[in-house]
Length: 285
Image 1 (cartoon, rainbow, N blue to C red):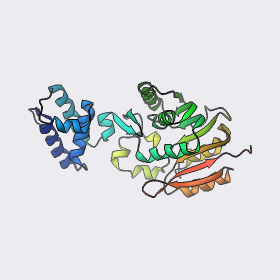
Image 2 (cartoon, one colour; image 1 turned 180 degrees about the vertical axis):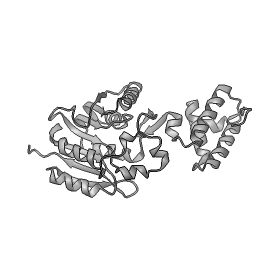
Image 3 (spheres, rainbow, N blue to C red; image 1 turned 90 degrees about the horizontal axis):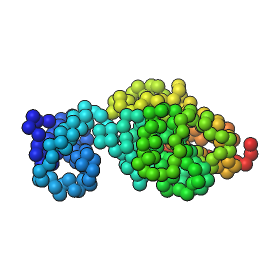
Image 4 (tube, rainbow, N blue to C red; image 1 turned 180 degrees about the horizontal axis):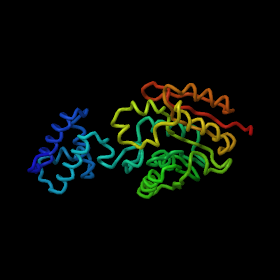
C-alpha cells in the first residue's frame, strides 16, 4: 500500500484491487470489498454507499495489513477471521480448516435423516457442523469432537459466541463416545493420500492444518475407522453421514456394506460429484 494511506474507502478499495490483480487473485474487486466489510463489521452494500466518506486511519491501516496478507496468498477467511456457514458466521483462523459449501450440504443430508436424540460431529474444526445441527435440529445433545486442541479451542470460541448448546470434547474419532450413545454421527474427516496432499493448491496446503487433510496411504484411514466403530456408538436405526473424496465414494460405500451398514447410499454435491455417503445402523449387533 502507498505511504500515504487512502482517506476514503473508494481509494483504499481501488489500491487493493490493483494489488490483488497483480497477485493473480480472482475477483479482485469483490475480495477487496469483502475484506473491508468484514473489518468494518458491515454489509458490502454499506461500504459501497459510504465509499466517498472519510475513514479513520486505524481502519485504513488494518485494511492495508489485511490486503498484504491476502496478496501473499493467505486464504480470505483467515485474513478476515470470518467464515459463513449455512445460517452462521464463524470465527476462522489457522487452527482449523475453512468451512466450505460442500459441507453445508452434508449438514442438510444429515438433517434429512435425523433431527432428534443425540448427534456428534467428528473432527469438528471450527464447529460448523455441530453448531448447525444444534441450530437447525431438535437434538437433546450435540457433541463436537476433535483431536486437535487448537481446533477444539476455536470450536469452543464459536460455541460461546453463538450461544448454542454444543459440548466440545477432545478425542480421536469415535473413541470418547459410549456405546449406543447417539442417533447421528456426522463427519468431514481427512480423506486425501499423502501424494494428493503434496500436490494440493498452495492456498490450501500451505495454510490449512495438515492434520485435517491426509489420511493414510489410500486416503481412507479415518473414514474406515469411522465405518468400523460407528455402529458401536449409534443406537439401533441411527445414521452415519460422511463427506468423502469424490474418487472414493464408491469404495467407501462398498466398505460400509461389507461392515454391516444398511441403506448405504452415495449422494452427489451441487457440482454432480459423488461427495457423500449415508448409512444406517440396523437393529443387529
